Amino acid sequence: MSQAASIPDEAIHQAASLLLSATHVMALTGAGISVESGIPPFRGPGGLWTKYGEPPMNGYERFLADPQKAWQERLSPSGPTKEMWSRLEVAEPNPGHQALVELENMGVLRSMISQNVDNLHRRAGQRQLIEIHGNYTLIRCIECTTRFPASEVPLHTLPPECPRCHGILKSDTVAFGEPIPQDVLEQCYSQTQLCDCMLVAGTSATVYPAAAFPLAVREKGGQLIEVNLYESELSPLSSLSLRGPSAEVLPRLVDKVKELRV
Image (cartoon, rainbow, N blue to C red; front, side, top):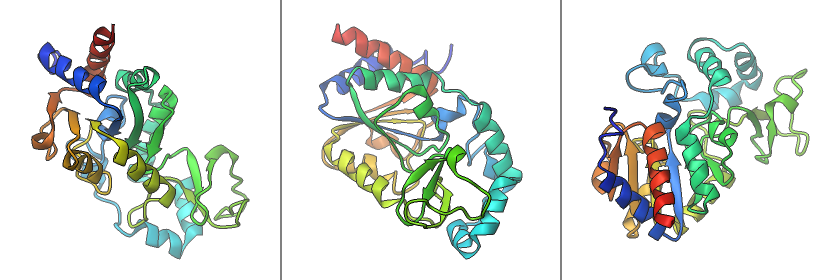
């Protein structure tokens, strides 16, 4: 029996009831939901940083000091960056991603904050998506925050220049030491203010500022539903903790939501 199959139906029923009784449901996702698509996490067993060591904590400062060199390293990746990119290129959305899209299509899930940069939520069809750490397929201007598909950015001159404001372009993925883009933060805060039930899937919610959002929902009396393989710091604060892989738990939850709506 899988871990997800051992979750009592009553717990799934309670979680579905919480989703349906809420007025503004949000989701917060992390690396755990992508692990099931073959993308390794950064920390913990099998993590890229466990294997290669943590990257410099001043990545953004180094980018600003020498953007040309940073771009050259991006175009000729090595170590954990090379391994991650090779995994990203072949990864496909899994049933966990698809279940969240179903919840959105049913009008239950109003918005989502993802800490993942892998583009899998978008590829699965998620529309109301806030990518707090960016998206590896996009290039962002560090001045005006305009984003462009990477395939459309000419690289004959490094660093490339923003065609709108002539600022420096960099990967949309947020580097260590780089502020979360203001437009993204504003979306996160505005949606969290409306949220009265947050579905937290595949994340221990310990990295800020993303970790602050479920706490904010809980502090104002909202409900938290945790879907995770392991107990986390969020578990004691959650109305329900469903232990198992999100690719198995979330489809069960969606099926129960459909059943209760009928």
